[in-house]
Length: 142
Image 1 (cartoon, rainbow, N blue to C red):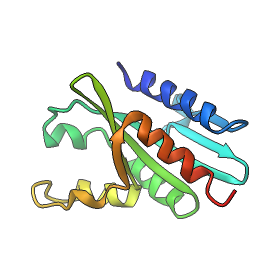
Image 2: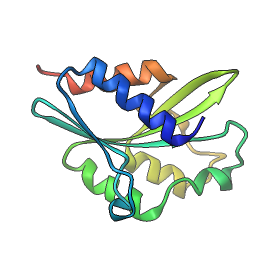
Image 3: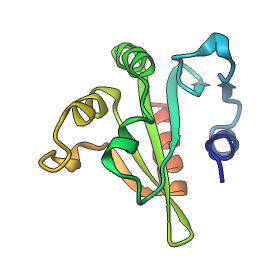
């Protein structure tokens, strides 16, 4: 499993749950610093950055997954539209996910992980539960 396959699976699932959505995958050098996916459905837009973690990664390795330029751009986007870090990790053969707002993730990365309040994530659960969470948020007030 790679981050690219997780991103492809996320995109396919969102297309099934949000009929008619336009979802762009941003993945070349000219889009450096831009989140992986932009999801457009009716009058809503969401930006999603996908990360694949190893469950046993040390804190230093965890922090290296998050580029400063990309995080800064995500924080700016979050001021206008829904912007999420979709952080995935396999546990016992199941893919799990945690959703973070960029500003909360930024605070986490600057903090001492040992004393940080981990309850600041938006949601956590199985990969598919988190996809459903995103699709429900995209459909609010419809």
